[in-house]
Each structure stands twice: as C-alpha cells, then as structure tokens.
Image (cartoon, rainbow, N blue to C red):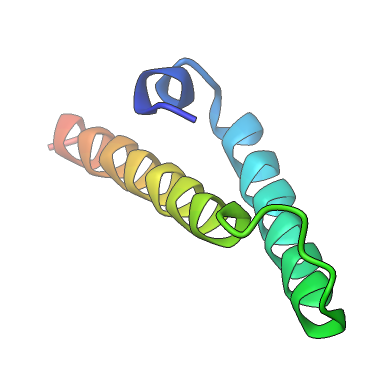
Length: 69
C-alpha cells in the first residue's frame, strides 16, 4: 500500500488498517510455524504497511499539536 493511498483515509480507517495488518502478520506467523507459507514476503509487507500507517498518524498528531499553538 502506498503512502498517498494511506493519507486519503481517515484516522478510524487507519486504526482499522493497523488491526487488519496485525492479523495478517499473525496469520503469516501461524503459517510459518506449520510450514505452509503461501507468500514469503507477506510478513515484510505487513510490517512495512503498519509502519507507514503509524508514521502518517504521528504526522497528523504533530500537525494538530502545532496548529493548536
């Protein structure tokens, strides 16, 4: 998922996206433990998407805090 796609979403949608990606990561870990992995890049992609969402949420918080001054 690209950063510009993430920026178009609301904060609630981003929180939901974090939950979904975390579930995807847990699903991948379960597959890895059982030895049945469909996509070996799924873990990396999920972690990167989670990091992107957290970065954008932090940018929004800083911007809101800066505007309040």
